[in-house]
Length: 612
Image (tube, rainbow, N blue to C red; front, top):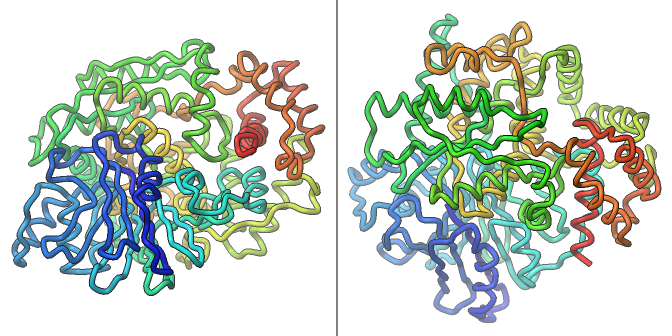
């Protein structure tokens, strides 16, 4: 896991060392274990790398890495979990390896299969490969966009990097705000990350499952992965379906325990993270495989004493089952202002809450020298985890709306207008222009995929959440907040084999009689504490925002709203926003719904204030 960067000049002028070093060093937090740069012979191409050493942590894993014949050079961010199996296959085809790294396996796979290598990888990645003979540059991102890759193109140069802020602060691209993206984020904080556009008008996102060729100054971008094209046949009986899910999940966890450094997990006490740590324990009992880390009993639990989202008792139960002694990190009112500016800067985008809890827990992993965390992300969007007791009706209303909006851009627009009207009636819509200028939707990954006719609204909603809206946003947050401390996050529920299998299952295998993640819960029978396996309580891993905004964040919020930020004033009816925030704070009426609607405005103003 690392930070990658590159520059290609189109007019023959040489790239200065300072330019690529500055771009690469802006990613230093992603790779605390080393840095490297590479230049083409005439210095019109440069690539940079910041290293987080996980596989082959010695000199063998240094990047940029050249192929044995020095024709190809790669910078790579991520992990190829099945690299040992691919290495054996490539050795049978004549490949000779000098290192024990998965990066060298990618180079050999490129020589053997070119783009076809991508479909053979089981992992997460953002990579760039330059061919010194053809002078072509190839970029690719993993199936579901776990690892980020951003770029910018101008008549002078092409630039890429692992983070938006690195591009913006490099001095190599324009930094104008994309107003349409900003407005969209304020209406729907989950409506941008699945698109190619960013808050920076000149920066673009290589979307999940896409690859890019740069040939002779021309870009060619195409989608190499479409989940709907890879759905397998599922077993006929429920018992067989459950067994197949169990097999896939257990193997997904086992593969992600391959590491040459200590690994751990962030344990919330919910079903997803508890299933992960209990399966890790089962894997050790069944027999560890080659290159599996034997130093894995590191669980980190964020607790929120007195807050509504504290799950410490459940986390203790899961840890006891897995025979792990966790590290507990208490997060309280005093942490509302802890490193607040740094946390917002590291997240580098607009979200529905202040992600302090995520940032703080990964900082604790770094302090304890555990650079890899195997976490439960992706399960909610894969199998439907977003309703709690008493919300069953609202859950199915959202599914019905999702089913309607998946039909066409026109119906999606109608749903947007309805959403804006509902928010307006609640007094939480503050965009200038009112309902006459509701922001339009951006083109998201998967929007145009032709889904099976027999899919109901629930499966359609999950497909869009997984590929285009909720999950891409969550993946972005976890990447930036973990890599702010040089921590790699692995996600077994996002193993592509498990994803395609689960998406092929009927809706009743995912949600039934008010219980979510049905197939996973059945697969984990006798594999984890029964109270957690069958529990219906759903608590997101979030900072206790209502408690904080009703208390310690009130002064910070008032001060922020008092600032004069012209770019924000052009977007937002600030007097109306100020009145609404004042009412919520004075009456201590902040709740999770108002936080989700109003915090993006505060987040946006903070970001734009930093730009001035």
